Length: 265
Image (cartoon, rainbow, N blue to C red; front, top):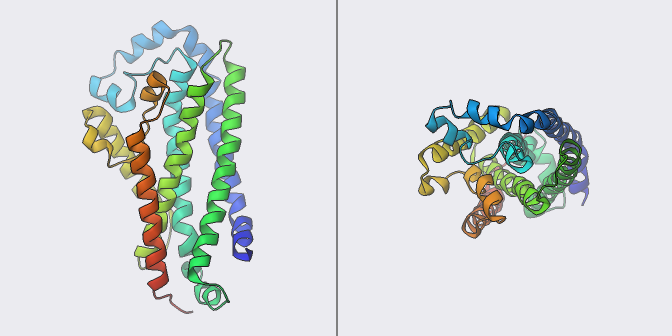
């Protein structure tokens, strides 16, 4: 419990900054929605000038930008990217920070098992992630209600937002696994950016090529916002794959960390 509370205190400020950044991006782009919705024909004309491959990659060919859910779905892609970077950074940091700051040997000499250490750190990160999502989703509903003078499907809107947490959990689990596999992590951000943008580029290729097999490789493809708007549901096969990978990554993290040699100061 002490490790859990300590991790919460240490990571809370970073979580607050990233949440403010996500909400700021949301507000900055959502205030433009009334203008875009009024000039929907002009917007459609501009989008028609895009090369078909680029339009598919960005999801512009399947989203109606004149509706709030369509416009939000397009914006949400970049909210998701920021959320994934934060989650990946957190996943890599929570176990590797002890080694980087040369305090790992001090921690493991305490009367607490390595399994308990990993559990406490994961719980603290997931707690902050849940709070971040609650605050962000509440803000998204408030901002959308302000900028839109027409009713929108709140169930679909909620489903789109829920995918943020599901994708973030994937990146936390993957970050945890990388942190115990890699022998030496000097800085977290370059690894985080490389991995997240690598998956994001795969998603752009997936949308451009429309290859369902490629969709299984990147978590950004598991929850297609255009499909969510059309069917008002999430695809069960991708939910299953996402949850399975989270469990596998987390299980291997426990196994490897319990056997790993922790360098002393």
